[in-house]
Length: 168
Image (cartoon, rainbow, N blue to C red; front, side, top):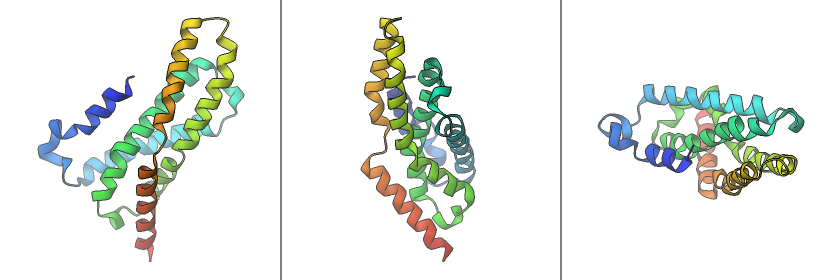
């Protein structure tokens, strides 16, 4: 998966459905989006973050875990936080939204663990397949781009603070 293409399409969503939901908050659309992110965060937590490093084969890390982190990061960074910034925030003060925001906080942990895991596993395939090693190293070198930047972290903290104010 070329994340640049996915991010480009997501960013240009208004071209496809701009007349309907791009500029205005749409509760039904947001609910579906939130369900998807909840699913991604749950799978990332249960299938990767809670497991022991020795439980993974290199192919599982490079395919499934890579896809989970990539999709979670792309949707969280580029859509969910933006949607929440235009949403009536107190209407979304519920356990699912809070769980998703807590999951977004773990993206950097997942990215760092992924990189460390790949680096430890790549030693074992180095002698088997140079092409595979090169492809994995390319993925690994680009992976830090999936980390949340300071702007996204600040936006996340701001949204979490606003949700806490809603409780009062």
